[in-house]
Image (tube, rainbow, N blue to C red; front, side):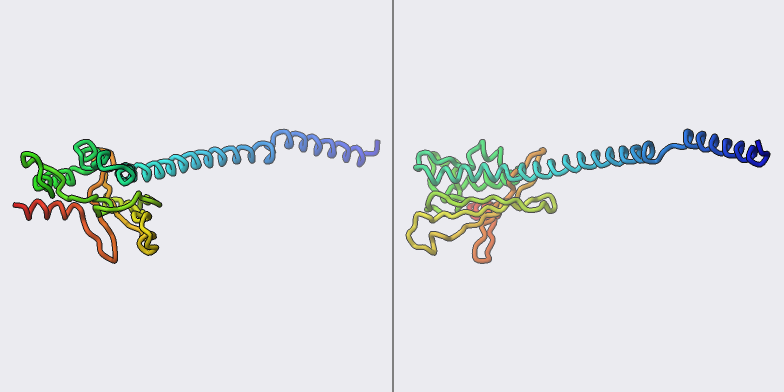
Length: 221
């Protein structure tokens, strides 16, 4: 064999051997590195999505819980205006008062109840209002189009807005379609939402049931 050809053949064989060894030793990006990176990225994304889901669930659940005492009050009020007087359920009876209202509200109501709107047997405590506190009226129709919308929490209080129609049995179209609006201040006490005050909003005016109870107790002294 020619000397130059022999040297060329030996050099080619050495290059081929080195290329084979390098190919075996070198990790292939497509087979090894990229799946590893994708796997880590996917795991991170799954963790983030699970955490976000729990966060959203907690937010939704929290909002629903804030509305719960208001919802129970409105359920009683709706049932009352669909019933006769004998079936009336008073939301300030001892059980719902203790369950649905804050300690501050309870204390103010008990003081106001010492001076009832009507005469009671043996001068016992009684209803200090003499009207439906939610509808702010002694008269009305079965409630229609009730909507309950919790707002954002601020300084530990959530404004839960309730709207409804209470004159749908009246023939006058303007009165029939009138929408009443009541705001409930909801706070958290002992880990549960309770009503701390109520406000009737109409024609730019906003009252306070809590302030009214304080006034009733003070004026009667």
